[in-house]
Length: 406
Image 1: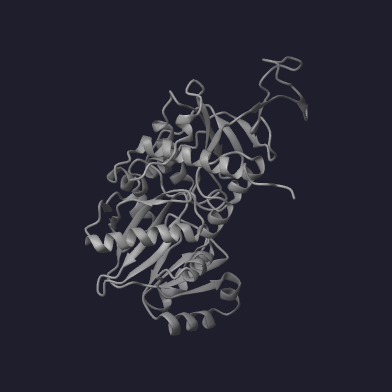
Image 2: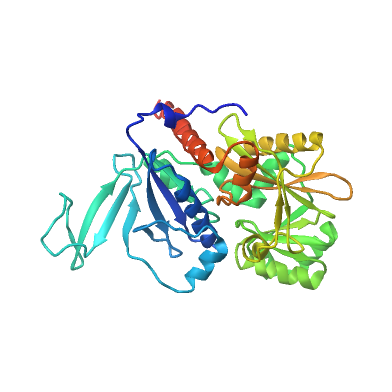
């Protein structure tokens, strides 16, 4: 594996980098994000990094909790959420312009009226005494899955603030999140894909029969039905006949205005590859998912614990090399940066390979496929975090050399 120049190591070894880890978010993958963030906090080297927990609630509010998440299993996070216990936290607001302070924090009713602490201002807002202060961050690590986090929205805010951040930029994030848009980019790059149809929710509501007829005529059965802008297999169904297809489209339409319907790959093997880098990305050894259910849905991924991973996947060397090359090609087609997990489907009958999708912020626990594939490739989890932070700083430094005026 070729070395990536480490901006982290070349920086002042005395000063620790302050890393803001953003997690949670307004999506159905909120709990998965908390589990990923817990693993990141657990493996950030305290001698090199000063970690700051930044939580986005399901209501979209940003806060600085008193302590980071600790549960590294999505199932455990979901179970803990049933208690309804909420810890106190300061409000946090990203400053959407370049400057010394990345975040403005507000501690409402933190001090008695008229008092102050550490030189911080204590304005009164609607009769409340609030302590307002700034917080500078050297780099941000978004550990957000799904809409309002993985889709370019948070990345756009960070671009406005001119803050280095881990992972793909606005374009790759938004296109990678939208399965329908990504398919157009992949097709333009000559990447192999299975047949598919894209249906708008409004089209479905206007004429269900016309949509069903188009899907059946073009794709037949079985098919997979997915919300275009969601991950972690949320809202995905397999349909074997018209009744199941109708129910599957209705379910997907609850999560998105755009629905992707794909022809099922016969006897499909689910092969994944982790990609790491900026302009010269590298691919890990491929891994294979053996789901506990008929396909790798949300329950099979996170709840029932019965799915298995085979890393490296049992593949001929020539096929493994082809898959890795296609993964890098898909990464570049989207103009990704930092990391992405590229997923494929291998036809068990014909041996044909199909690109399924790209995840620009894949599950990031120590037992997630992305980190396990890199561990099997010789890059353990803590070193992977170091590498991603270095890549973020490297990419940011490159962008600072660009002209912003004529």
